[in-house]
Image 1 (tube, rainbow, N blue to C red):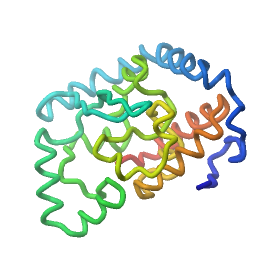
Image 2: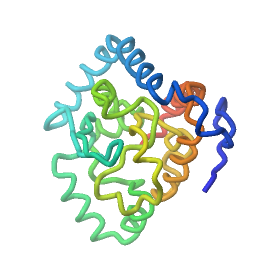
Image 3: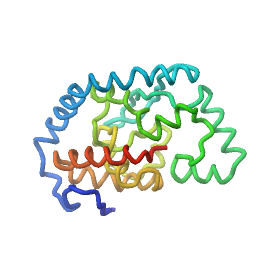
Length: 221
């Protein structure tokens, strides 16, 4: 199950689960709160014009969806809306008419050419700005700044692992940094297990720094 990763600054994959006990028990949550509160003024300055731009594209500026949280409980995740209001219908019609797209969706739960995404949505997804409202979920304790990629309830059967349920889902994480848009959905379990095994302040700071580089490359989808 082990998977090596070349993300700079991360501890070796053999790190013992017992290490970083204080950070696991409360330090990680304290870091989340401190960083989000410190960044809040700058985030609001960026978020307000984005909300206006999304609203001008038609519909509510926000999109919410139930996701699986720590322990398997459901929570409502917030994002800037990047898709058409009738996105579910558009996806169903597109997959029914396009076998290649259906195979891509079944493999990764993503589409390289997604008909649901709006013009503004393409920009905010490329820059990952659509995920800024998830910082509200971090403040609430639904999520962490760093952790597994949030999973939909309908995807539970596709997830072959246990680490996800032991952690808060993350705004960013090992999978997002190491294999963004390049791996199958099933492969996420390996990344989550690896992240859980070596959870530490050092790892989270390294992943946050790596996330900045990934966002600057505009590789979101």
